[in-house]
Length: 124
Image (tube, rainbow, N blue to C red; front, side, top):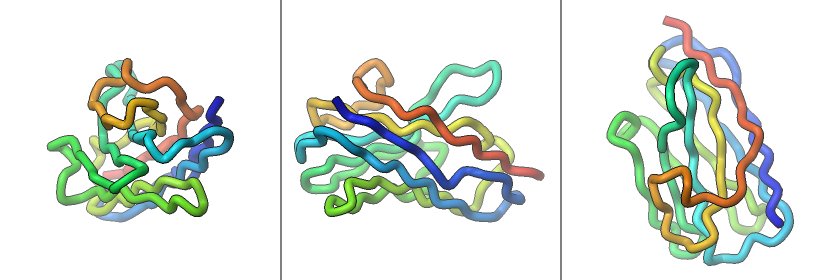
């Protein structure tokens, strides 16, 4: 079992920055990949970014590429999402998730464990 707890969400003005954290506890082998997803009201959950625990390769949705950065601290079992140049359309609940095969897929169905989410609101 893996438990995930997100933190760092809040209200920020457009153009501002936030850093989300996802603390993992329980069994988190180095082969796992971690993903960030988001869901805005009346929209489907969408992929934001992913990172492999081992090697640290990353992937980003086109909508956030160049503005968001995903990183991890293996010693702390924590994954971060640094969000810069935030836009109103980034407003959503952000979730982190663990994918046991280490692929870092963009599909939410590929992730087995999920956090409860943290709200990010960007005012224009």
